[in-house]
Length: 269
Image (tube, rainbow, N blue to C red; front, side, top):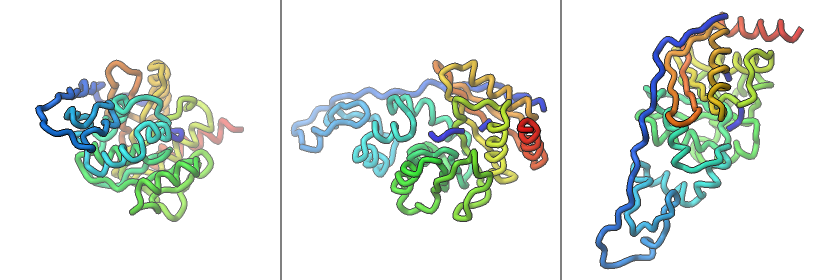
């Protein structure tokens, strides 16, 4: 994904764990005839459809067609994800659990839009997707992925533009940011980016941060840096058998955002 955001804070809820994902076994049913369609392979596990593979059983027909037609490897690579679809589900699906009501969702660093499209499948409520990314090519891919809402995606570098273009709303019900691995919230650049991201959520909205550094110590350090700015986490989820941490922030006042910007300006002097 594009890159992402994060004077003391404290976790206000205990750490939660995401249970192990249910796995499905491919069972070959009794069948008298094998059609040409049956010979097609599952785009996830490569088993022939005749084997009764259920990897995508919980997904809509439109989503299954997307994966089959576009290729799962290509979709994941253009989402800055270098692993399998199963790993994608494990690392990204918990984001949808934070979205507990209908509303607009902005993905800061949306890449090709595949995460938002996946969240549409995972979330238990209807979402209106929006995305920004500094990569113009990937933004065009995101528009193609949402042909009915191409105006919801714009090429924007959040590190340089504190405000969104007029084609997008001023604020959103949910703002998700995959915090970049090189982010250090003790530097003025990262502080300004964080303030810009925080300023995009509605007063009663929610900011969701994803920490995906391969070193869990680095992820925990970023969380502490955010806490040290006087921002609390309402919920934190750690993905089992990985370093992934996803958290939602408590209510953030305009005064707090202003204080973060002021701190960044002072550090630049």
